[in-house]
Image (cartoon, one colour):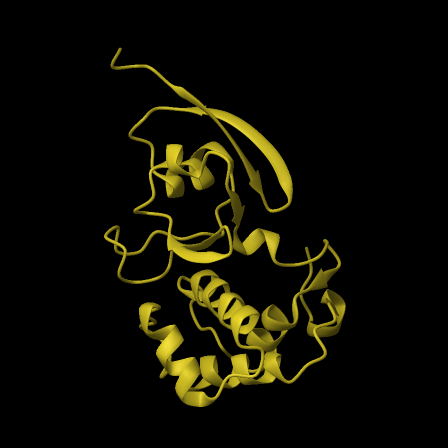
Length: 171
């Protein structure tokens, strides 16, 4: 019984998935190792840094803390699922590039996931609302000012996808 796996069904970045996982498999391991979605990063492994943030049924969750079996029947969005297609970026991804909201990139996926949830709930947040919302996402490279500026810039757009070529990003 120790090697038993459980079948789970969920939606991942808009696509229905069905996989078998051991009962002790974490969501971060399922995403990165089993499904090859390496955009979600593991930082602290105890749920305090925000690097592994994903949206689980629209709510920000630390993928390092969530047992994979708990996502059965859920909808998960990772950083890979934010852009509408291969040729466009979300306004938030574009703003992070244009406004220097990232440095080394380790925390960036989690920052963008958390900011996506913020803008979904509060489309035009104040600086204080941004600071409060983003408290669970740590960055060791920036002073957070460029992250805040990036979120403000995205909040001021019309929400239309941005062509990747326009920002110099290539697949």
